[in-house]
Amino acid sequence: MAEPSEVFIQGLTRDGKTFRPSDWAERLAGTMSCFRPEGSAGGPAAFIGYSPYCVPRFVGGVKGVVVNPKLRELEPMAWDFVTNFARDNDLVVIDHPNIDAP
Image 1: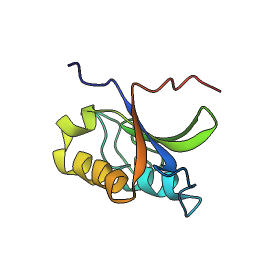
Image 2: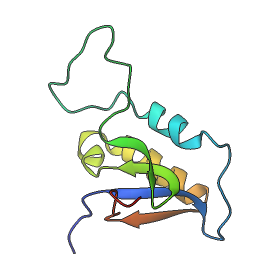
Image 3: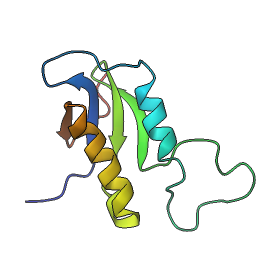
């Protein structure tokens, strides 16, 4: 089975409730902001912005976080943190999300 190109952690629990607090996706992505591709620009402003491996997004009208599996290669413990966050909070995770959905 092929590894997903991306996964989408939805801001919905498996029983359909909206996950709180409302800024959870930004907080989670902010925690992962230091994980960047090798050779990324450094310097004083490097911390501003999200990692390309973990980005808050709305997909199909649902707030969540898009996570690239390359995060697992870069730092397995960061991948475990993100996936365990989803599991521990009973959040819906979708493989191969249609991130272009309105």
